[in-house]
Length: 260
Image (cartoon, rainbow, N blue to C red; front, side):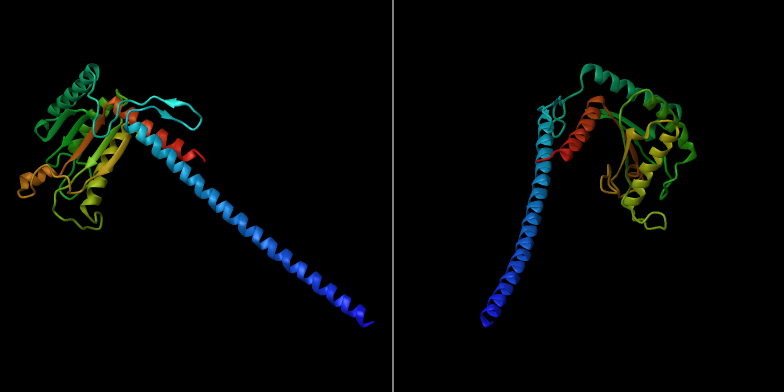
């Protein structure tokens, strides 16, 4: 009888040991799966990042971009650090656009407060001396609706993208509406875009940039110079610049969708 009890005892201990080993093995298996998943996720993110970086480098160097599915996207010449000069037709188009804006400013009697320049990137229209906004405010002056209406009509006839930039002088501001010059410059740029959109222009064509007081065109030492620094610029990008911006957005989307 004692031998039977001993055998039964040993059998019970063996069964308990087997249950413990099974539990331990399950835990080790789950840990292994967990770390495999972590490794796989890290590899996917790394692959996506590498695809995006490679594509952007190809864009900026003027090469062709090879997508994940093996297709190619033609890329115009590089635009960073060295932008291709506009062709003769592009230059004529930009010059005509600039002349139309100058004539519109002259009709409004503000030609001395509006600067229109043609550059490689496109046409830059700068409004100085509080033409659009009163000092310390971001509400468009009613007298400015005329020139903005002319601009809207001109922009309606072209597909180009437009960047609106807001600037201020170095005078500090801290009011319930505007906590800093950053606020003021950003809201002014946004107000111009909002008005142009109400005139029927596609909002996807516009973007706003704010520079506060940190891009002055004159010293902030006299009232006249500060008026020059309080400005809003519209940059009408030439067609090549528009295509490059769309291409960069497309490359970013493809890179983020790619997997390893």
